Length: 103
Picture 1 (spheres, rainbow, N blue to C red):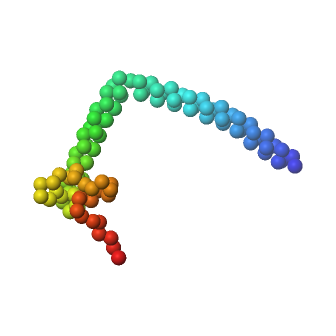
Picture 2 (cartoon, rainbow, N blue to C red; picture 1 turned 60 degrees about the horizontal axis):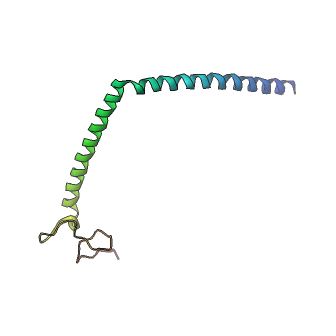
Picture 3 (cartoon, one colour; picture 1 turned 180 degrees about the horizontal axis):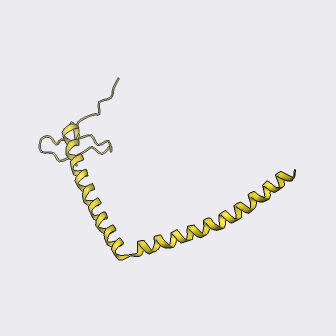
């Protein structure tokens, strides 16, 4: 019984001391992160990275669109029709064509 009580007390003391030290360290890391993120050089670098990511996604979207038009025949315009001339059902299939369903 005595060992269990000592173990319980030791566990409680360790928890309290650990949580205080953990909270202090957390607050210290939070302050440091805020200082770094408020730095103008870091904000400028983040803006440049954001612009490059945006440009890269635009290029990727264009490439995927081009490949999709080559691989998916229903995306290719026929008889001068534009790609936006789809039926009103919302299926994405061009007018006059039906989706092929497997049997």
